Length: 216
Image (cartoon, rainbow, N blue to C red):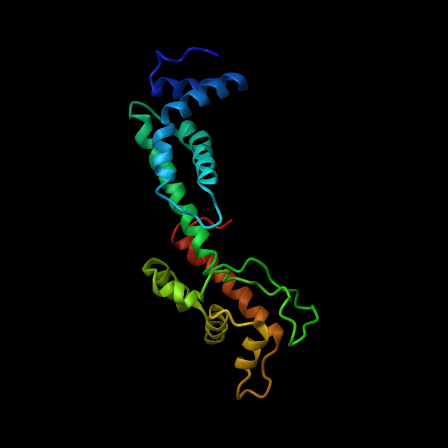
């Protein structure tokens, strides 16, 4: 392995930017990581994303280092503060997205032509709120997410708001439909609910984008 001990971190980054052989690029990257490992772990331990381990987040940080920080670096500024800024930004986005997808994002949608039974709670309408406790409980304790909820709520129609709030209380589909039809003489069916949830999904994406949160 080549000896890089006499090179500064900035020299290593410039060398990585111009290296043409993968083996050389990999060895330089290993040296950069070795020098920055402690600082990266310090940042990683400051974040928690539900469903991810510290190792997962660390690997995400290395990906940003390799694909964003090194290619974008321009001297004469120090490399470490620049790289750590990009890593922190990605960590913040990662945590925001991981939390918000349990609050705002519908991951799947049922086919409008699917056969539904009022007693069938396994149908594939989006299960957007997979949290412990209800989403509304979670929102009340998190001011940032509460503000995002209010922003989403402001762009929903009256019917979409009703669907959103019922689903946010972890109500099952049959319960949602029954509640919507109270005093309405069977006005609504599963297709109405599905359309509303699809609209909520699309509007949620816009809200996330407004707040510069990546949507996977």
